[in-house]
View: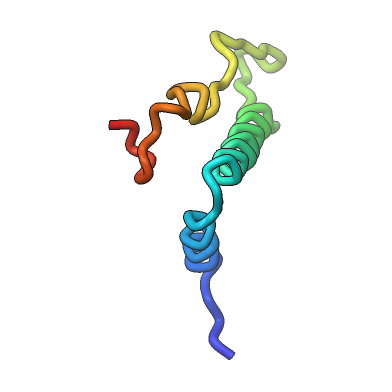
Length: 83
């Protein structure tokens, strides 16, 4: 049995997803992007990232935006470039 790296499995899975209908592709993008934002926020507020000069301060400038929020999904081409 051949052991594949996690990155290789992820790449293969996303390549298979390109055969799905457009709405399913957008759903996958939303789920993965939302998960990545959640992980980033969790890391931002981990104890290792607190600064001693303002240990309890949590500052927000803007809420995180998803990949699809930054670009109108109707404008995306087959390759996802939007051009």
